[in-house]
Amino acid sequence: MSLVLKPAPKFVAPAVINGDEIVSDFSLEQYLGKKEVVFFFYPKDFTFVCPTEILAFQSKLEEFEKRNVAVVGCSTDTEETHLAWLSTPKNNGGIEGVTYPLVADVSKSIASNYGVLGGDYGYNELGELEFSGAPIALRGTFLIDKNGIVRHQVVNDFPLGRSIEEALRMVDVLQHHEKHGEVCPANWEEGKEAMNATKEGVADYLSKNA
Image (cartoon, rainbow, N blue to C red; front, top):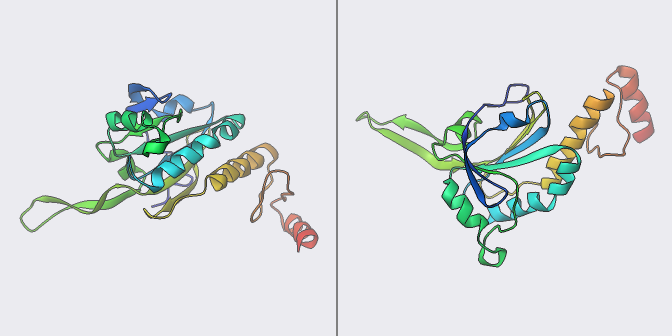
């Protein structure tokens, strides 16, 4: 299921903000009209690949903030587990020092609505509710614009760590397009030439970059 060009599913859920404060009513709606959002899902707290991604987002947080972009993480763990992990030093497997919000999707409804829950609920022959797969979130990343519309998404399987540099590049692509009206070719980076979305514009770009 692709959410690109669709409104990002709304939610209100507990979260840990600033690395040490639990709030009960966190929502992405606070950013509407103000900031783009990189909203990402990860499988579980106190695991292995997840802290590398979460800390990598933190290491690039200043770059996202320079671009007026909010970074928000989410897993199906509780807010108390988030807080415990945020309070654990890195040399003990923790993510101490992370300051952007981590949402607690205990009901798994947020992951389900974003299409990243690693399995499905269903009923067996006895009419009993069962879950097939892994009841945790895949590594989904969503770039949401200021109007609350999803403009980019990528979803990885559990073992496949994402590229934070690519998430930052996609922010630059979106912001360049919205500012200049140009489209951005393959592997485009800030400072490189983009092109007009016309036959002539493409021909001109290809003739100079073949």
